[in-house]
Amino acid sequence: MANDSGALMLADLSWPEIREIRDQVELVLLPIGSNEQHGPNLALKMDIAAATEFCRRASARMAPRVAVAPPVPWGVSFHHMNFPGTITLSTETFIQVLVEVIASLHHHGFERFLIVNGHGGNVAAMGIAAVRAREELDVPFVGACSYFSFPDPEIAKRHVTSEVTGHACEVEVATAMELVPDVVKRDALAPGELTELAQEFRREAQKYNVSIPYRFDQLTRNGALGDATKATPEFGRELVESALDNFVRFCENLIAANPV
Image (cartoon, rainbow, N blue to C red):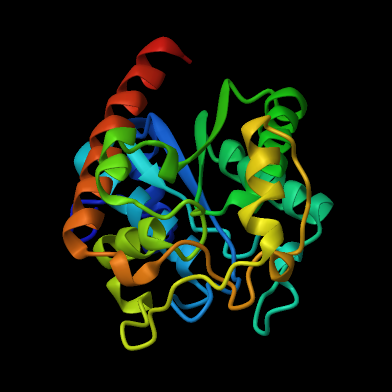
C-alpha cells in the first residue's frame, strides 16, 4: 500500500488501508512549511513542497515503520507579507492547527510524531505546538525539527561564499534543485539585493543569537539572500543525501529511545 517510491503517505490511502498498516507504523512525520515569497528564484510553495518531499524520501527508506501525514501548507510568514502572494497564519492559529492534526492522528492509534519543518519562521511556534500536544493530549512522543538542520555543515562550507544566506540563496536553491526542481525559476535566478541592515546589524544580532522580527523587505529588496546563481544540482544532491542519512539515523534512534 506504499506508493510507487515505497513511501507511506497517509493521504494516499483509504481508511481500511490505514487501519491495516496502523500497528506497523512506529513514527508519523508531519511536514510543515509555508506559502511565501522566495525572491525571483523559487516558487511560493518551496518550503512545504521541499519538506514533504524530504519526508517522502525518508519514509521510502523506512516504510512501513515511518509514515507521512498530509502536509500543512501554510505557516507563520508575516515577515514576508510585503511581497505579493505570501499567505500567513497567525502564530496562535498555526499552533492550534498542529495540535489538532496530532490529536486526530493520535485518536486513530498513532503514538509517535515528529514535526518536520521547511520554514524558518515556524521554528518558535512548532516548538510550542510540540509541548502542547505532549502535555494536553498525553501523546507518548512529539518532537519538532527542521529538515535543513540535518546536512553535515562541512558541505555548505565547501560551496558557499556569500556572507549572508538563509532564504532563496544558493543553499536553498540547490536544495530545491534536488528535492523539488519544478519550483526553481532557472531563467530568473538572481543574487539577493541586500540592504545595509542585512549586511551589518543583522549579522551582529545573529552572532549573539538575538531574535529580531524584521520584515523581510527591510533586509532584501528582491526577497532573496545570498547568491542563487551559484546553486548547482550537485551541491543540492550532497546536501539532501547527507540530510537524509542523518535524519534516518536519528529516526531509528528516536524510535529505540522512546518506547510506547
